[in-house]
View 1 (cartoon, helix red, strand yellow):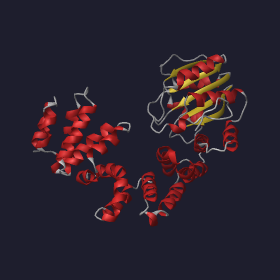
View 2 (cartoon, rainbow, N blue to C red; view 1 turned 60 degrees about the horizontal axis):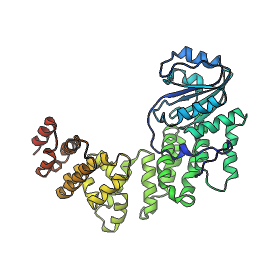
View 3 (cartoon, rainbow, N blue to C red; view 1 turned 90 degrees about the horizontal axis):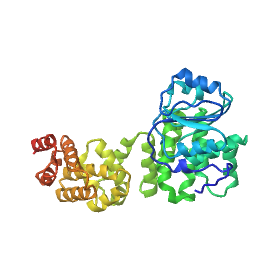
View 4 (cartoon, helix red, strand yellow; view 1 turned 180 degrees about the vertical axis):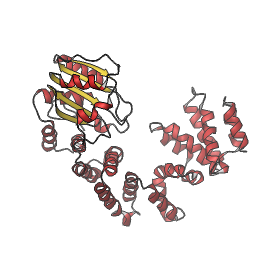
Amino acid sequence: MSRRSSPAMPSSGSARRAVVHGAIGLFATVGSVVASPVAQAVPPTSDLETLQASTGLVLVSFDQANACPVDPWSSAVAEKLTSVGGTATAVLRNTETVPVVIGDKAFRTRGMNVAYRNGQRVDVMCGCPDADDLIQWVDALQAGQDWAQVLRGSIDDSTQLQVGAHLEVSQRAMCAGDTMGAFGEIAMLWSVMPERMPEERVLRFNRVGRDMAVLARADTQVAARIEGMRDALEGSLDDIDALEEWIALNRVLLQDDATIAWYDKVKDDKAALPLVTHAAPSLFGMLVAEHRWADAGHLIGDALDWLDARKELAGGLVLALDDHAALSAAERYGDAKRVAKGILKSLPEDPSTACRLLDRAVEAHKHAPAATHKSQAHLVAKCDNDVTIQLWERTL
């Protein structure tokens, strides 16, 4: 997905962001508004009075769900506004003003960026835009362009699937409370991405799937449509691609219990072994959540290959703490020791790692007594927390 500098083509940077964090607002002005001091809380009345008395363009960014990052965009947007004679400053977000600034009926589970001109709301950009997204939006607003038409134009003018533009069209519909309209865009992406963008599998399952889940919580009609999509796959679960999609839609619907029921049905069927092996990374977390530590441990094939795959994921080594506990619960003590040593080697500067491995083993022991074992003594020698060691010793 390419990025262009023209305001006629919205960026796709926010579409590629699968995992985001943090929460602060950007209060930026083009015109004569006096900005509030950086990081100083502003009373709701002062915040709103500033907006209503403003001249020129005012951008206010809200992140009620703690879904969007502060960096890297705030300084870049400030530079853009300064270049056209404006000023910008970051202030603590003020959720008291959100219903007034955005609208009482707005869909407000993720980030929102509201444009005010001369005291009147003129546009909303939804989601978690990055610097380029916001700068292009400012350019369009300054040029008097309708951002919805800009988005549609980028979709119509391109021969490529413009995932970022479709996601933003969906987000705009969410902001307006049109959940079915938003779902139409999301459902289209879900259906065509496997063929047109097979390399974007992670984007499809994470970002598109996440937005689908948000819509399913908001609208029972959307949830019913997703259930229909999921149910249509149930006759094809012997196909790996269909199974993967079925599991993903179960997760969207918060119905992991259906996935676990499938696993319990086929786990002893040798013919289903390739399917279970493929689904193992998804199944593992579900089984741990159900305290089925031994079953989770049996899902792991080659322990070091599994650990190598963990290392490729953000936070993967934290997840690997559960791998060690699950392997121990499954009485695969040799593999558990190899995984523990691999984790310790990857985090040589963190003295708490050995203790954390023992802590997870003790937690797993509550549901699977085999999870703690004398073979873990090498971790005791590296752990400097006497409480952790005592709790571990009591389980033996």
